[in-house]
Amino acid sequence: MNGVRRRTVLRLGVAAAATAGLATGCAALTGEQAGTTLRSDLTPPEPFRVRLPIPATAEPVSPGRFEVTQRVADVEIIPGTTTRVWGYDGTFPGPTFDVRRGEPVTVTIHNELPAPTSTHLHGGVTPADSDGYPTDLIVPTGLDFEPGHGSHMEVKEWRLHDGSREYEYPLDQPAATLWYHDHRMDFTAPQVWRGLAGMFLIRDDDEDRLDLPRGEYELPLMLCDRAFEDDGSFKYPSIDDSLLGVPGVEGDYHQGVEGDVILVNGAPWPEASVANTMYRLRLLNASNARRFELAMDEVGFTQIGSDSGLLPQPQELETLTIAPAERFDVLVDFSQVPVGTRVVLRNRLGSDGTDVVMRFHVDREAESGAAVPRRLVEPATMTPDEVVAARTFAFALTNQGDHQMWTINGRPFDPEQSLASPRLDTVERWTFTSDFHHPVHVHMAHFQVLTRNGKPPAPEDAGWKDTVDLRPYEVVEVAIKFSGHRGRYMIHCHNLEHEDMAMMANFDVV
Ligand code: C2O
Ligand code: CU
Image 1 (cartoon, rainbow, N blue to C red):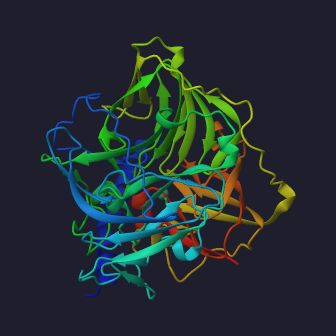
Image 2 (cartoon, rainbow, N blue to C red):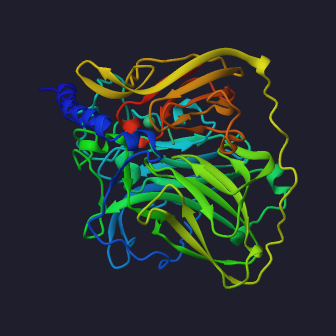
Image 3 (spheres, rainbow, N blue to C red):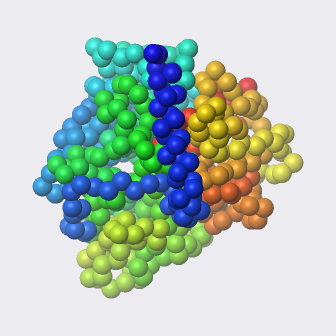
């Protein structure tokens, strides 16, 4: 039996579970929970016992050239245990890139893992060839790998690089909080879960002119959830743990996998020691499926940037909802509380431990010298009459023959097909519709939310974005600008289990 058929048979089992879930699990479908919780076998550690780690900064080997090696490493995540991670340079999160607009970089990725990878710079205005297409793979030297074995789709065109490849990032885009992560066909979810994600910060002169907190007063915070086996290893419901055979997850987890341990920069419910001054937090939700509604005890957030850059002016948010792959660049002012205060960052969508994210201990006096700027950057100049075309993308579970799959416009991902051909340097109006929680992500092109359910956008929709949170049965309209590069790019759901189960499509910028 070939891989394609085996997969189809397997899907029947998944579909039966899906239907049962639809009938009995209505709370999950209409509520705020975007996935199914996978419980750890070990007892989760006490919160706030581990110090917040700050990932290393990626250092160039020569100006503009970076080398990163993906490898297996054993690290301590849960105190007293070791976890085997798949990491960029063997770390989870990977090193943080700290780079500047207009200074292009080349990143050579070496793959020493036991499986192929593809690396995508999320939010990058990247030439198509370097965008981390799912079938454009770095195969570890010597690995016996049969492309597409067990896949839901027969892919004709694979590009396989032996051991390593270079990615070119022109960085001709405004200062923003980006991230990079694995994007391998059918296996993105388990490979990111094992640790293949890191932050990528772009700075520019416009940002430098603002008095924003710098250095130790700027904290990248990668939020995600994981579950753990008894021995401290990551727990994940893969059908095939080798990640070389049949892709996908078992049973009910097709909705998305949520862990019961919250990690920040790879540490469980950490504590950061901070001074009583203004900080800049670069928040990224790197979870496969979990959404957070973040709130701080005693202090609010001043949002200064979204996914793809700074806002025209800051906005105050008491809470903020962050879906997978979204970023929020915020200022928080710890001078509002006395030295000695412990400020908890909470998740209002969580329960049973996942309602807490981390804690800040305001343990000293210092002055970051920063103030909240009144204006940040020039507002964007897109106007409705620039729109040259309108298209709709429906994200839904649909019947495919005798089973159900996560699809866009009724179709599972087909690398041979393209759903749209927007022209370079034009603006289009795209409408996204949804039957469940689907964080919709577009590669290369950035957009602004025009309406949400026919009403004005939510506060969280502000600014230039590349990912937008759709809840069940929501309709979001965006104005999307195709500046940058021609070529084949992707639109997909960033619930990584949905993405792996075919909720992905090509579009061609022409
Ligand atoms: Cu963050 Cu196509 O992905
Ligand atoms: Cu989805």
